[in-house]
Length: 355
Image (cartoon, rainbow, N blue to C red; front, side, top):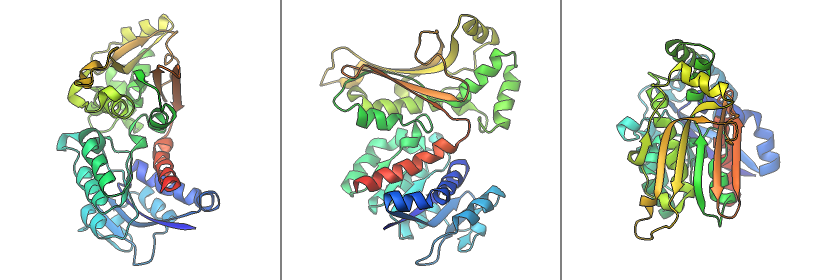
């Protein structure tokens, strides 16, 4: 049995569901994978908590505590004055699970610094947080390699869909010529409400009330979330997109979409979706490979023949067009955040299958 000590920074929608998974899957992890996972550090917006030396948290109690709306700072070993950085710097950890909210506007901080600190200490990092990966992915990847640590971010693209795993592992040897993706749930949810006659304001209010849109909704509605996911996916699986960034994406969100546009698409047997496209040029130039990749996000009518046309409002999908494996389409139905949270478990298992 291998004991793995982890800290979870960000015990919100994804973080607490991940902790619940560790409770529910405890026997499976031990019997099938030989892993005993001990959570020894926690952090949320209200403070931190550290388990006593040699101890661990009662995760069932932690999950119920968080579901009641309390901060981890109120747990035994907790403090409102504690910082996530001190937790990562001082705790005896094998893995940092960084699940704090996306914060691109502040350069991905504080997540980037937390991940940098962990990797420098040789601590493996798992994160579904798109900010650090899209803004500092190359630097963090180099840091991980330099210190013998793993950096895993499967949950940054299309929720629980294993798009990155398929693209980087199962398409080995292939040239991915084009990626088509609908990796954002919120926009599909809003567009489908518009299709049944809901006003724009009511559709956004409904999405917010159901926890699908957060804050003012700009991150999703203006296409930033989709663009970030496209950049991460393209960089991972397309040789000609290695240094692509958010500024390279031609981006149009869904704010200008009218109800009549959505209805016309459905009347024609299609569906309107915010589509992300990455396309490689036909003749890669070894000196300037990035110039041959088109990155685009815009609302598109997907006709009935399109591989992603059948997506419902709780579904996401990715299409890989390759030179030797043909065209591969992946789809996920994700009515709750559980599959997204489960990506952290998938990453954890993949790390310990290889180290």
